[in-house]
Length: 212
Image 1: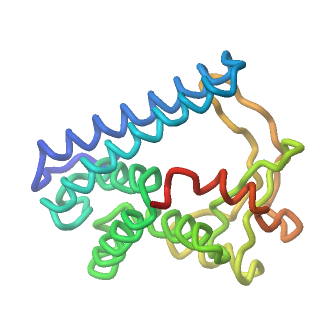
Image 2: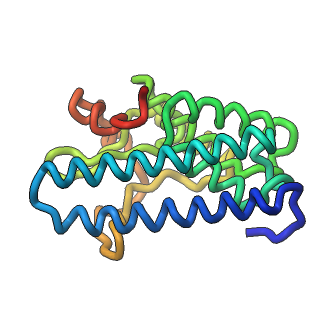
């Protein structure tokens, strides 16, 4: 991350702390989840995680309301990135508001914002709204434990769209980290054949806790 003076140094630090708390809790969550057998306990743990994610997102939205723009000049590159991260764990309407804020800064100066937020938030919003993705960011596990990509519009030109935001070609997931363990999932470029529509059950699981 680039070091530079920012307009809101204290709020930048608040964001960094929120991001660290978020990632630490998510890692601990999956470690604890593996040790639970009762479905009731798993649901309670998941509910607790969602509540904490939304609380952090709410604080992030308060900060964004103060700083107005999720720019690097306001809260640094890491602060800008954390706003994007917490938005992905928030409600759909909050994701949309944050995406608009990122797009506004990007139009003014693409170097003054964590621009990877735009494809990640765009894809999440589109998938939640039963629309196809543009950048191939969202993959899910099917019942057999195999990863599939939520369908992408004009798959042939997906990597060209990704390149506009400095993203490399969309690769198949190669590792999936849960806590400290990693599971090999394959390698190589994503292919059109990797795409699959979400079932109703998969859609519910994907959006649970994100749509009011």
